[in-house]
Length: 362
Ligand code: GDD
Ligand code: MN
Image 1 (cartoon, rainbow, N blue to C red):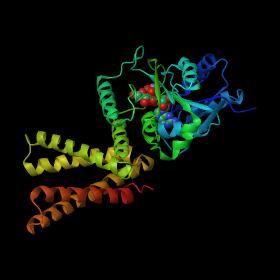
Image 2 (cartoon, helix red, strand yellow):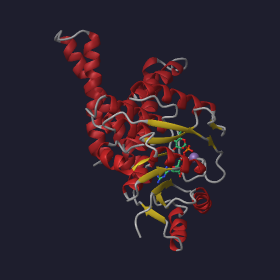
Image 3 (cartoon, rainbow, N blue to C red):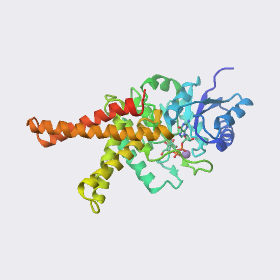
Image 4 (tube, rainbow, N blue to C red):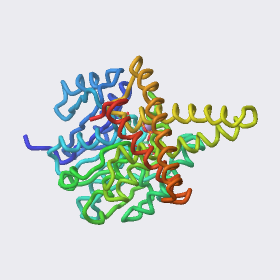
């Protein structure tokens, strides 16, 4: 037996009910094509991988990669693609929201050499997102799209799509350069290729989800901005640091928002304390979810980490004020430069200590 022509990589997390129907749909759509499906499950609590294994038991076209102790859509997709020996690889969501009947046309497009990558698109003629994407989510998505266009080497109407196909040798070639974080695998691919990829977008209608629930939330936005920053700066700063800095920026906004409200009822010092605590708590939560998601703290360790984080940030603020005052006193800088230097010092300090003491990240 030789390797199949097409590997369809299906990332899944808690999609137990969708796996059987997914296989049936692939089977129906891919008549006449030598295909295999690779389910990549991050050890879902609902046992999605078990269902995939059961099906694989009676069908050699079905494979399952069970990843333990790791989470992440992008890295799941990449590992799935890299486990393939087929000439072409595709990625499609495991929750039936993408239209699998598009796969043969994607393959045709690539085979005819019309594109390096075929993308299922909700935003070209005939495509659509039917589901009640919440107003906020739509706005975030539109904002993200606009941002992405600025740094993308080629125009793509739906750069957030998680539904696409390309030659495997292309992904093998760029794999070491991929960021591998977050949700935006297509964006990562387009930004990590050494040349402008020729993209063809095929319209499809994004279906409503029938079973299970979406794993995307607001934290995706920060991951997304981190990815853009990383690519825009050519990988100059560590990803983790960028993410930490972005979270810090959000903390600043939270701080000012709380402060402005609290001033109505509290004296300045009290309001400033309250705002600091709220901002630090939000920062801790976001960093735990995103920046240090691979070393995420839970239960008892979570509370210990939060207390430690307060202490670390407290010292950071003291150092900030100290350095800025010194610079001012010795007339080494005006207040703007002194303030910025202090803030930068705090950021670096908070990051260094958080990464080593609070989260013990590798
Ligand atoms: N292995 C693995 N690990 N799979 C995951 C993980 C993870 O950490 N998180 C999500 N998935 C799987 C889900 O089970 C699903 O099959 C697919 O990835 C997409 O996740 P959803 O949670 O259903 O995402 P969505 O429907 O909200 O997002 C859709 O729109 C995005 C653009 O806005 C998807 O099509 C995304 O691919 C797309 O980027
Ligand atoms: Mn979905």
